[in-house]
Image (cartoon, rainbow, N blue to C red):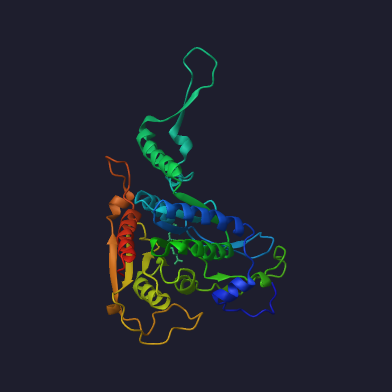
Length: 360
Ligand code: PAZ
């Protein structure tokens, strides 16, 4: 590490001017452009779903990296419900995190090999045995497979991957700009867990950091807050933008969500507490029409604490809850647990329709 370089607070503009884009960006943009054009022609609304955690490499030849918590459950599950609601989905996810449809058979929680059995051929020949799905799993798999095949046939799911926070930021900007041609018909659902800190390329050690010198001190720079440029510049104020706020202290959810809305001017913040996120989330939105601003916008890099201007009467806060038992114990008839993402997506679709029709 180069200890002499001071920590910096990057604006989004400075970030993109100094940090290198991923090498595949050009091809990715072309594929997204084609996908968006086709969906526009076929009259579908499109949602960008971001999902999974970002890494922050500590070395250029990466041996070690810092990671962000997220299995990608929220994003992958929500993507399925958006598809079911008729949206086309750009699913931008951390490599190897959960994906729509295949998430039902994750290797760790529901290994698919356990649902298969070998049936020796009984026609007296030596032909290869058949592989079948066990009787108990057939209905479940049939439903998932049918939905998956129909999405494939309709061409309504486009998948992109990121690993590092740098990949994520470059991709997010590029995809958002492409999608912004749809104006209000585009939704941005930012469920990925994105690192707040990173090591700029200029401060990265080229080789593996050696351990001979005792303890390791790393000073990271703040990742630029990209929601403001996303609202104002990349989508020109037209996109319907939903961000997530993860906290471990539930009391912080509402004030932090209000501060984010006030600061960035997007449409919805969904607050979720780490331990309760599968059965309750807090929707925070501004009241309509929004009250006039009572003070100057904070400087870039100011921490997202509750703003002195933020007054809870300017916001609508709605808890969305499903029973814990329904979220954790499969229904005896359907063999499925209730997924809160079904409710989240249904609520957002209603709001998006209002947004398209010219309401808030
Ligand atoms: O992927 P997952 O289901 O394990 O977790 C989802 C989540 C908690 C990362 C997501 O709902 C979220 O809050 N994303 C934003 C995190 C943040 O940067 O505050």
